[in-house]
Image (cartoon, rainbow, N blue to C red; front, side, top):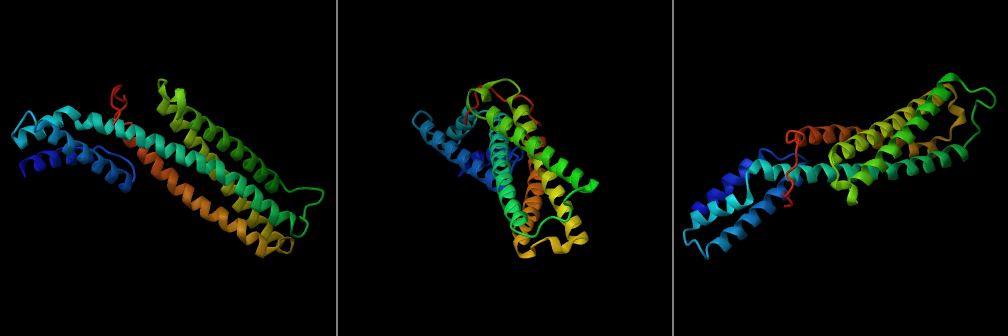
Amino acid sequence: MTETAVLRRYTDHLARHLVGPDSRRAAILDEVMDGLECATEGNLDTCPDPEAAARRAVQEWGPPGEVARAYNDATLRISANRLSMRAVCVLPLLAATWACALLGGPAGPWAYRHPPLLLTGLSVVAFGCVLSLAGAVSGLRKGSGFAAAGERRDATVTTGTLAALIGLLCVLGALVVLLLNRGLSHPESLDWPMVSVPATITVVSGAYFAFSLKRFVSVVRGARAFPTAPQSASR
């Protein structure tokens, strides 16, 4: 069992450097352990001592910090692309559900002169939509294809995703404020059963993306502990 102890020490050291959700980190450690065990078995052909074969396998994989750096870069990209795509998808859903709820209900109470809060809220919604879509598209474009091979690509992907999440949270926050303002001042102008659907989507999306933003920032900070990704690490 000495070779298992050698491999376990390596993966334990690697685990201290990994960032991301527990499920992602566990999958990485399982993958690394499988690779090390295969490498150890291959080394037994030329090295009959199991412990020496395991040590050679560890050396072939490289320092745990460099291996973690490569995996952290991949984790950052996967998280950024997933969040950017979800931000892009939730905006049309919000627009469709709110449009159906408001257009299908009573007429708005401000037929001729809109209050400043409504104009400000609509401006924030418009700005947030543009920021979210632009950031998400930029992150997705820079995080895949040939553009992903450029220098500072991780910084571009990170910035785009952060912009997408911040813009989306601006939209969600403004929608909640506008709903509360209209509901408190003119409750008769809303069809509450219809409005409850987009309102629920808005609140749930706000909680989800706020948590996602916090978790993504922690991934970014952890990944930036290794500022320069190794050129040849592809595991």
